[in-house]
Image 1 (tube, one colour):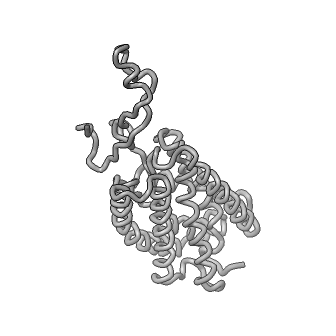
Image 2 (tube, one colour):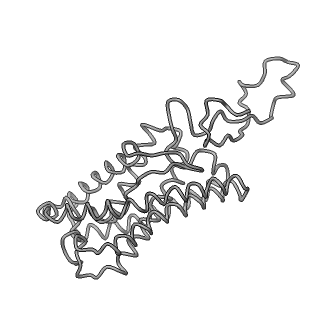
Image 3 (cartoon, helix red, strand yellow):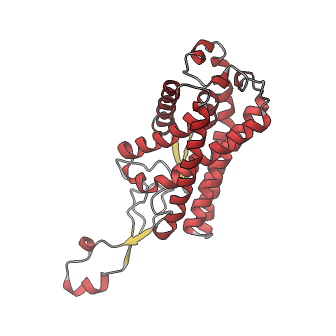
Length: 276
């Protein structure tokens, strides 16, 4: 039976009954042991809302793939960090990474967010972090901000950390690759055209949707309910794709007069300069 306190978009799943939950009546003990009972509103309690792909979407042996994708993301992030340190000081890198982590925390906890389908829609300004702070600090900030948010504000998300961090980082890597391809080496980021910013935003947000869909189908199959939840999430995320390019352009416009902060290492060198 549906829990009356459960939001309409909450997907009730099943899990094994815990030993202490088994009926104490000896006449029913053998009948209830080992059976399954529904989660009481997965992803929602009165005190906490899961912020990302909910626990249970991917579990058991299937989590091995998430460990692998997260390890690959960590390895590529180290490459981006190494590249960043070739043109910035360690102090600059550390400062920008902290700024990125704070920004990610704000995206998750302060900005509006709402549950739709298989996950929650967040305004994650991944492209903004990339343009202002660089790919290495953005990667570390996404991973660090996600960890802080999970550990201190949504502990039930922690088992899904490897799934969620992969979902955030691989689209960032795609943005980094696209930027190297479409942005001339002589162009500073503050001089980007709207069409270029739109391309990068679409790649990042579209990548997030694609990864969420992948994990949902990988973990739960292609049932009608699951596909409907994935579709609902993807459609809702179109709103973010419309918002982020405007946020990026506003951030770049505001940054034009902040060249001194770039010279101090607060922003990435590329924000006001050609590639080196």
